[in-house]
Image: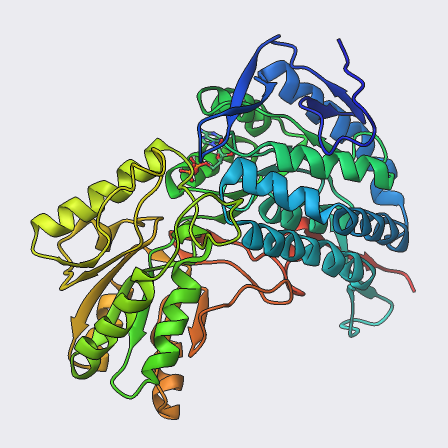
Amino acid sequence: MTTHADASALFQPDNFIDGAWAPSQTGHRFEVTDPATGTVIAHVPESGPQDARAAADAAAAALPAWRARLPRERAELLRRWHALILARQEELAALICREQGKPLAEAHGEVAYGASYVAWFAEEATRIYGDIIPDQQRGKRMTAIKEPIGVVAAITPWNFPLAMIARKIAPALAAGCTVVGKPAEDTPLTALALARLGQEAGFPPGVLNLITASRAKAATAVDTWLADSRIRKITFTGSTPVGKHLARESAATLKKLSLELGGNAPFIVFDDADLEAAVDGVMAAKFRNGGQTCVCPNRVYVQAGVYDRFATLLRDKVAALRVGLGTDPASQIGPMINARAVDKIARHVDDARAQGARVLTGGERLAHLGPHYYAPTVLGEAHAGMALCGEETFGPVVPLFRFDDEAQAIAAANDTPFGLASYFYTQDVRRIERVSRALESGIVGVNEGALASEAAPFGGVKESGYGREGSKYGLDDYLSIKYVCQGGL
Ligand code: ADP
């Protein structure tokens, strides 16, 4: 049965394949719940391999005509999509707040942030230049041209239900690729809403296809894509274990991958920092989305001379944070996404406490608010043996580590397999240069806690992955270079 929802509805709870909305061929659905209350808000398709294959068939069939369009025509469709996203921003923000739990003001920020990637890549679509290589031999002309890589599979996480998928779909379509996507099981509705707006914008059938699946069935659906040689690229944001699985399993068809994986961001406060600014930096970087972003500081290193003053200033700000329903305008921190997330946070805090950390504020679940709430927390006297130092907590917990000198801070900051973001605060210009170079991460914030921008390259090093999203580099992952050598001139 194909359902025909009301045209004004923001999303339709079905798969979107070849320009049509339809339930899964499995006949099954799974629940999407509000993380604040546990209330079921929708039932979406429990897709299986047949649905994944149908999506890939549609994307492969749509590819020749889409890549043959003028870049300006693709840009025009992206601009229309952008305008429709902005026209529905109130409803999109409310939907993000509902399925993901973040405070409404942050959800509004996410719509603007996600939309900015669509606008950016609409502009970049017309600037995909190649090269004419200076002559190397008489009678020969050598050129390098950029072509769309082919069908792209996009797999996204739940923490930014709109921005993560928008920043994959937009560059893929701008480059002339077609897309199959699977949003996170916790937050599929915003992605379905985006596809709906893409349809309204006039995306040709098959250019964008989305299927949904529960966590239990995600691997079976995605495995179908991994084995499909027509899919030439995987773009993934999520955990490092799943990223490694995708890399391993797509080796058989040698797909290109962009992997934006876990982080374990250090945040270093030197003795010579503007302490008030550093505290504001931690607040901005750490508590966005309740600490559930991959660039959130996970370890805060404070030099011994300012440690006590910094700890007091930070504790007072964190203790004043308002926790509650995302829909309440007073809330600054909403619920965590699910039970698995809160259990991990509680495990990290309990382990740190058992190993000697001091709870300066928070340190407990807020069960009176609901099962998924955790108090904004500052822990003093953290050390490297604690679980929260080696693993990403992904919650509103700031552990403070004391250090004595610059070399010690850099060594500790880099002592992790991850390398996505890092931050440091100092007013010494030479130290800024030294430490920026020494930190092993794809992104560095210097006296700044808010780094996200569609104009900047976002991505990691080491086990945080490879590939860059946003900026002039963001299209490269969706393009391949063809060298054309013309002889006999
Ligand atoms: P998190 O732990 O933050 O949920 P995951 O890496 O588990 O991060 O999930 C990110 C995305 O990867 C989600 O869309 C999820 O459904 C998907 N996913 C999880 N496991 C697999 C898998 N084995 N194969 C393909 N996709 C997966």
